[in-house]
Image 1 (cartoon, one colour):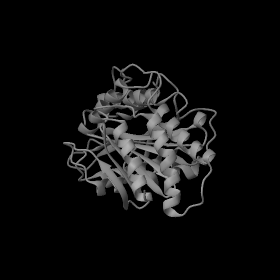
Image 2 (spheres, rainbow, N blue to C red):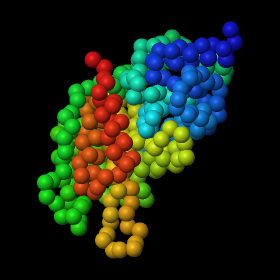
Image 3 (cartoon, rainbow, N blue to C red):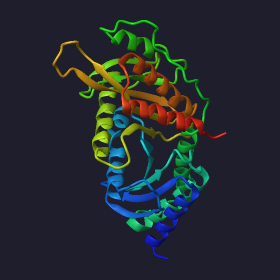
Image 4 (cartoon, helix red, strand yellow):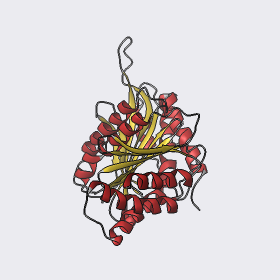
Amino acid sequence: MSVRESLIKHLTSILRASEGTLMVILCDLNGLSIAKIGRKTDIDINPNHITSLAAAAFSASEENWDDLNIKEQIISFSFFDKICLITIKINETLLTIVHDYYKEWPLDVDSLASAMFYLKQKLGEFFGIREETERELEFFSNKVRSAIYLFGMGTEVSFVSYSPENFDTTNLLPAISYVLDSLQNPIFIRYGLISPTGLTLDAREVSGQTLPISVQAFSANANVGFQKMKEESQNGSIGDLLSYIAISGQDPDNFYGIATCPSGRLRFSRIENTSNIEDVSFIGLFSLTYGGIPILCELRNIIYSILQITGSEPITESFIKSVNVLTSFKYD
């Protein structure tokens, strides 16, 4: 069996492991396709678009992880209206799993970890990279397994609103600050709202945490990555980008994540006939110690509360719907 045939064999094993998985694609870091396998679906999936998004998914958070001295990014989850893209870096390639999270969630982590072991081994042969030891291959596959497993587990947080009962409709920022101060669980290390231009509108940081860059620099970097993902996803057939979550770290007991998602539209002044309404994004840095479910729940609650202040917005409402779908499934 040739190396390419062996790669297809392991991609096929990933596809067959979950009924919700629609396509598995392997590409280089620039998005050039190497191998792919898929099943029949009513969702229109353009493989070239998927590989472009995969390349963006790993470059989008690179600057933040460098600045935070947290290495290396293991996996990213890019949620759209119809599907989720799970992208994993293996040597100098990117493996992307196109998954229908409405049909099934989370993934079968044991089957996926086994495939990671052999894919990394075969890709080393394919690209002429030094032969890795079994211990190195196991360490990599266990990291991927842990990241996906942790993201799909944890204690659910009730769906509630943090918005104040009364607020000044001519100045919404104090009401939004009230929401950011009302989190039930201290699960974010730093978080805030940012405009498309990178301006931090409001931010919080857990006291006692010492990080090498300011919350404003962190938010600006994360915003650049999120805007990049949004640009890459425009005019695609898989729907709007609802959230982008990247997981990084060497120790499974100490993984970190960056979450970005839309947070509605904010009017910055009451002057008529001026372009003063902008999309707002939420940015958050978190530890994955307690699992991804409470992170997603608090994200949903914050965004839902902000929408009650700023007014409805379709993409942001779709994000809330996607979180409710994800949290209805979880590992035991």
